[in-house]
Image (cartoon, rainbow, N blue to C red; front, side):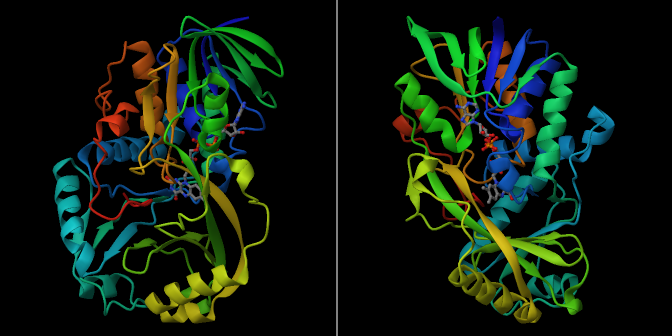
Length: 393
Ligand SMILES: Cc1cc2nc3c(=O)[nH]c(=O)nc-3n(C[C@H](O)[C@H](O)[C@H](O)COP(=O)(O)OP(=O)(O)OC[C@H]3O[C@@H](n4cnc5c(N)ncnc54)[C@H](O)[C@@H]3O)c2cc1C
C-alpha cells in the first residue's frame, strides 16, 4: 500500500496532525498507533487549557487551539470535554514584571485576560491566602478539557475524512534511500511513503534511533496527585497556576482536584521511557510535598484526603518548547515532538502547522517555519520565557 503521509503516534499531537492533513486534502493519510488512541502520555495528561504564554507566537497558537477545543462539538460534531472554569496564574514579586509583560502582550492579540491585585484575587477566591502575592493574571474563559476524548474525537474525525487509522500497530523500522524514507516497516506490514510525521512524544528518541538521528529531547518524570477536597471547598474551582509555590491544580468534578508541579524535578530524566516505572504508586513524600504547598495557599486544603495519583512523562527540549519542522537529515520526515509537558492545549494549532509545512511547501500562517525548528538549538536561538523554564514557559 502506498501512503501520502504516514503519521506515527496517536496521541493528541498525531491525531490532530492526521485530522488537519485530511481536512486540507493531503491525499492518503495513515495514522499508526502502537496501542490505542490517547493511550500514551495524552491519557495521563491533566489537560489544562490556558492562554498564558511568554511569546506572541505561542500565545496566538494557544488562542487558536482554545477556540478549536471550545468549538469542537459544533465544528466536528465531536466533543473535547472542554470546561471554561477559568484560569488564574499567581505571581510573587519575582514574577510580577514577567506576568505584566505577558498580560500586555496577550491582550494586544485579543486574549481575554487581566491583571489582578492580591485583594482582587482574594475576592475571586476567598479561601486563598494572598499574603505573599504581588499580583495575578486571570483568564475567565480558560479551563481544562478531556485529553482522551479530544484525541479520540480528532482521530475519529480524521477517519471520517478518509484517514486510515491503524491501532495496535507498531512502527519497527524504516528503509531510507538517498536521505528519504521510502518504506515504513510496521507490525501490520510495510508501507511505501511520500511523507512521514513523527508524533511519538516521549518515544521520539526510539524512532530517531531507527533513523540514526538525534534531537535534544529528554524524557522527564512527573507525578500528579488527586485530592478529595473538604466539603468547605465543594464545587468545581478555577484552575490555578501558582508560580511562587511551584504547583498547579485543576478540578476533577465537584469534589476532587488534580495537582502537579510547574518545574518538575529534572534529576529524573533519561533519553527514553524505559528508564522509568510510571505504573507504581505515588509515594507518601510526594503527597506531603504537594500537600504542604497547596495548604499554604488554601489553608482549608489541610483537610483534603489523598485520593490517589499517577505518574507521567514529559518529552522536554532545552527551552521547554516543541520541535516542529522538517528534519535536517531526512528530507521527507517532519518532527512534531518535544511537547515539554504543555502540548495538549496547543495540539490543534500544532496539527494545523504540521499540515501546512507538508502541504504548503514549508509555509504556514500559524507561525514562521523557523520558530520551532531544530536548528534553533544549533544557532542558540532558544524560545524565550518570562519565567524560569518549566511547563509555564
Ligand atoms: C502528567 C502530565 C500532565 C500534563 N498536563 C498537561 C496540561 O495540563 N496541559 C497541556 O497542555 N499538556 C499537558 N501535558 C502534556 C500533554 O499531555 C502532551 O504534550 C500531549 O498530550 C501530546 O502528547 P503526544 O501526542 O505528543 O504524545 P503521546 O500522547 O504520548 O502520543 C505518542 C503516541 O505514540 C505512540 N508510539 C510510540 N512509539 C510508537 C511506535 N514505534 N509505533 C507506533 N506508535 C508509537 C504511543 O503509543 C503514543 O500513543 C501533560 C502530560 C503529562 C504526562
